[in-house]
Image (cartoon, rainbow over all chains, first blue to last red; front, side):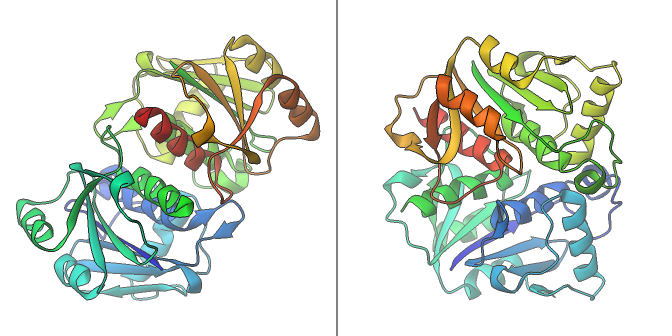
Length: 177
Length: 177
């Protein structure tokens, strides 16, 4: 069971479906993270758990329980909205746990992504790891300090990628390991 | 300059922005292919060209000329619509070239993605290759026969991925090569 935790310091819990990047302050990135974490061609990655931490909420997606997941951003934004309105669909859970609590409670080896980290190809990958990523403005200084204390700084590309693209690359390394 | 050509046998040139997967017959996949081909964190892949072949049209995106590209599906769908209505934004071109003409005119080494192909890690990758992918229902039998004659069948994952996810993985292999 691989875990991804994505922290966004900008995304809002209120947004317009017709303007996710603007009204939702880049909640479109989080929607695409859900797609990246779970969507295979005509299948779902049931062995994956994803946490999105934003706007004082944490939304958890459990692959093996998910229903009603469509790969498009708008469909995923509707699932987020349902969770935020306390009417979550199966496999989706909402809490007020902080990002740092969520990371600590994962109980797994923490790998956090940073372009200055050690290349992922040097890691001994296990399915039972927790990968931590930041939304479009990176980690805050406080979160970065926290992650430096408990995690392993890892890079997945010589280029700086969006969080949703990072999840695809991590999955590919795990699929091949 | 890396080239991607994505063929969709379902996507429509007329669609509703509020229902891309349904009304556009999975044009959402093509929108995400544009994101995958070009979007870096706060940057654009200027050394990439993408062709989307669907509904008797071919839309070409030239990275080094692109303007007004946003990473969200809806924003990209608006760029597609402008091109389809013969009012394309900079870096976007529309033609009635067929998929097979588009592939032949690339003048590059053709790598087509198929889960039964040779693993990409065995290839001697060059930036000047053309990667050919299918939308959500795979290649038609005719297109598959055509690609078998002129291209190299390559797999990028032990799992079957969406076309937009495949582009991310190919970019990662190229970025590392």
